Length: 544
Image 1 (cartoon, rainbow, N blue to C red):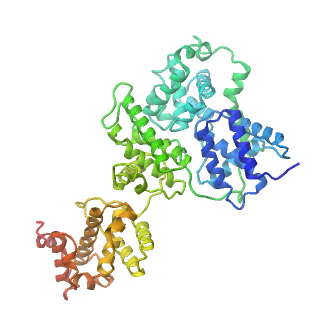
Image 2 (image 1 turned 45 degrees about the vertical axis):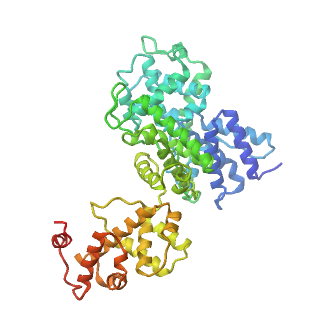
Image 3 (image 1 turned 90 degrees about the horizontal axis):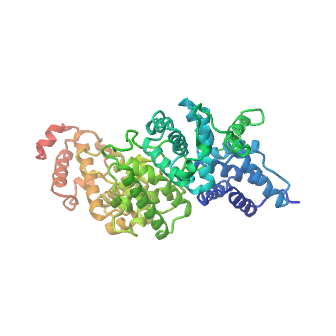
C-alpha cells in the first residue's frame, strides 16, 4: 500500500473531487496554479501534499463564494485516497489548519470566511430574523446546485452573500428594510455589486421557483419545517466554524508556513464601487446597470480573445476576468469602446500576477492601439481594483535596456542618477514608466557619447520615439533647472562637462530645452554657487 503520493496522483484526486462536488473549472484552474507553486516549496513534505491540495481547493472555493464546506472536501478527498489504495486520509480539522498555512505560503493574508458564514454574519449584523438568514443561505446553496459557474462568477463572496440576503428579503417583502444600499454597506461592497449579483441569482433560480414555500416566511416570521438535508446544507458552515475554534482546530504552528509570491486574483472582498447608486438613478461618473452589464460583457469577451491571441495562461485569463466588474465600476465613464484597452490592461495585470513575461507591447501588438494606452489603463485598473498589480518602474526599464542593448555601466549609473534627480513640473505631460526609463537612458547615452538607436529602444520598451524624446527633454530641463536653482549640487552632476561645456547641446531638445541649457551653461561658467531663484528663472526663460 502506497504512503507517499506523487504529484500526478494528487492532481488526479483534485480533479476527481472537483467533479464530485460540482466545483467550476475556473476554481479548479486557480487551485492548480496555486498547487504548482506550493509544490516548489522545499519545506512542504511530499506526504502532506494531499492535505495541501485539499486546503488550496477549499481556499479557492471560499474566494469564489462557493458554499462547499471543508467537511465535504475532506470527505471527498479521503474517499479518493481510499480508492487509490493510499494509506492516508484528510480530516476536516487537518484541512482547516492547512487552509491558514496555505494562505500564508501564498501571502494571501487571512483566508476569507465561508460564504455561509458571511450570510450569517451580515444578517445578524442587520438584525435579520434567523429564518430569513436561513432563506438566504438556502438561495446560495440552491444557486450553486443549479449552476456553480454563476456563483463563482461574482467579483467577491461578500457581494454574493449580500445579494442572497437581499433576494431573501425581497421574496418576503422586507426589501425596504434591508435594501441594496444597506447590504452593500454591510458587505463592504456596494449597492451596484449587490444589485448585479441579486439579478443573476434571481434569473438563475427563476420567479416560479422562488415563489415556492421553501423560500417564504409565514405571517409569524417562521418558515416551513426544513428537511434534514436542507438543515445540514445551510448549517454545516456554522458547525465547521465552531469546530475550528475548539481544541482540535488549532491554527498552523510557527515554522509551518512562510511567505511566497502573491497570488491574489479573486481574493479580497473590498471593491472600489461607489455606494450611492440607486436602482433607478445612477450617479454621474457611473454607468447605468444595463450599460454596466454590456461593458463588463464586452471587456470579458475581449479578455477571452486577447488571452488566445497572446497565448496567455488560463489562470491569467481568470485573474483578468475577475477584475472586469470592479474595473468597470471603479473607472469613471468607461464605455464599450474602451473595452479592448481595459481588457488589454487586465490581461497584462493577470499575467504579471503569475510572474509571466507578457507586457503591454505584446498586447498592443495584437490590437490597433499603442502600448502607452495599455499602460494608462493599467494605471486606472490599479486604482479601481482591490488587488496589488505588479508594476514595472522606470528603473526596471533602465536595467532592461542596459542589458539588452549591452550598454556600459557608466550609462546605467548615469541613467539611474538622472531618474533620482528628476523632478517633474506640474505643467509637464505625464510619462509612463517605459517612457521615463527610455528617456533617461537616451539622455545618459547622449551625454556619454554612446550611440543608441531610438527605434531599438522603442521596440524593447514599447514606448514610441516621440514620447521617448519628450521624456528625455523633460529630464534635461529638470536637471538643468535643478542645478541652477541649487536643488542639485554641481559636484553631483557628472553630465555638466559633456552637456554644458560641449557642442552636444544643439542636438538636444526643442527651443525651450535649448534656452534652459543656455541658462545652465551660463550658470556653470564660474557661478556654481550663485543659485538663481525660480522667479528670475521664469523671467530669463520668457515664462513671465
